Length: 386
Image 1 (cartoon, one colour):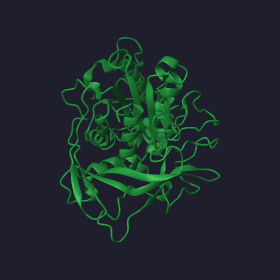
Image 2: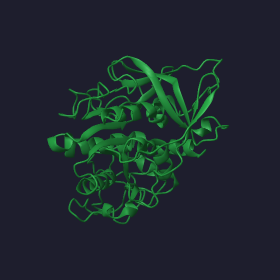
Image 3: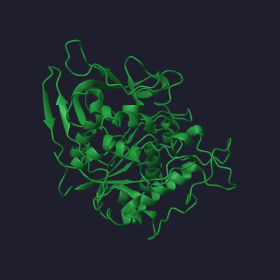
Image 4: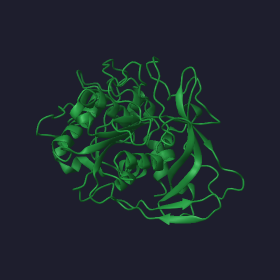
């Protein structure tokens, strides 16, 4: 899985547009880039007939023969003194909750929308960000017609086709997410408690899903353990488009709440042109929820990285406890999870974990990696599995 980190980087190269524009309804067309893919205008199928009745349109679900969450997730814990411990991955048996995941911008398909046939990109990002949640839940991940890497030239979400009346690409993507969610709710998810998990474009679609399908529905909201909306600005209470009934998570046993953050190193805080940590509209504030210290202050982050950061590792993943220390920080415009490296010259762990493009991106590429262990612990606690 040495190429996993590279694939994850490609997954989010353009995710700054994807995560923030999922609810756009603009129909102003820029220069044409392609035609609509087959089925792009299909209705979301809210009734019993759904694209997601077909198991081929799922990446992960409990009854799949080729489940992309069923991969080698063993990790090597590397301590500061150089000692190591192989930690085998153990999936949950009879998990009491479900996790529903929408992945970030990853597809290499041509624009305006990807197809529903997964490639190695989808497989890698599922392994990197989501499959490990199989420790605490049954895993569900639809393959959806996202706006792919090449399609994010139109950052507003407007159409990138030459077909008159063609659907807006982000609406096509969201329609698939909604269809998959409704199919899950009708079948596997009846009366089940659930966690929503998304990064970047995926988090943007889930934010809209909560606003339209959950926020005003007490029966569904009561079954929501939490929503982990990472790397996409979730409006803070009091800001435009903030959730009315889904608050930020402030303690480990709280349920029905949201965790959301964008990650920047302490040595490179957000600049004026930073892509994350503020609403795209420029109005209001976004949440920063530190999974290592929900009540405030700082805390050590429990990180999982692909083994490429330590080539001599024999497992697919490396676990680094406390390599990063995290704290939510705000200035007059931005709210972000500031991470500070604890590495010293005497440290036997990797000196650098990568995940950078330019300063305006922060550590968007590894938003999930830096705190994956903390997020797992939080879901464990929220669902009463500790």
